[in-house]
Image (cartoon, rainbow, N blue to C red; front, top):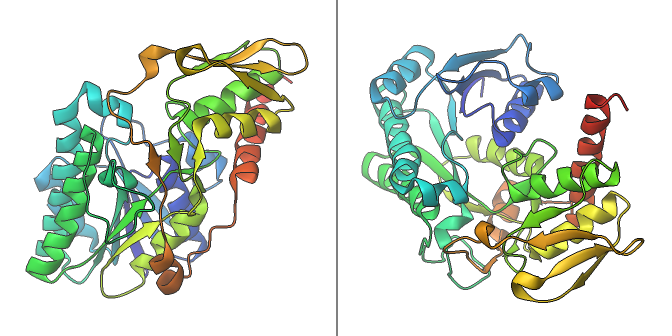
Length: 343
């Protein structure tokens, strides 16, 4: 691989993936939304914003002509498609928009590759949300049954990979990503919301945090390890689908407990349902409470993956557990808060 196209380079995954590819000596063309600026704080934090082998371009994946033109112009060895609507909660507010962005955007890029770079490898960032309420653990053989508009949007994209692979012989792969977090996670995601709140509460700048479904269980991994697996997918032929997961589930409650512990705050939980709270064991103050407006209309109770195939064929071996993951996130947020407030 000498040239890679990374859509959505401004997101958590895009930034980590670009950093890994640049480290490997690959030239990277990264795309961002036309409405956003080319600069990005994640690229700055990773120290790659001004890298000589990185070029940023604007691209709307919903624009089929623009997709064809870009792929024809650069003829990438691998297309990593990470751009799209990435928040489950937002999909309930705009279901049609989510399906269009994630589904049609993928089809536009697949068609661009089929017409102008048929020897490339297409790697899609899909999601465990395609499984919805399917029994756990989920793997590549689990029948999809998306339960949210976001899950459906990712299922459209995932199915397109298989269809274009079978129909046109494209080398196309789908990474079925279970929850993967890092210091670069967007604040709109509950994991970063928790880590930032823990940091601010520890510094005395906030008092508590409101969360939704504390019982939802997710398979939390560390994003850079998952992006390493995407690089391995792009280098492997033929195209195939891979579940990327740790195989261990933790509830939102457990994630919050670990994050606050990383900030030096021991939580004590009490109550049930909407009345459940977590108090600071030192002073008895409520630090976590439930806000019913944050509950989703549909929320898969348990998503935990079986990544045996990826371990065997890609060498995927996640090592960062929940305690270490939350520690890294909280320490990064503590450093940001101190820098913003002058210590």
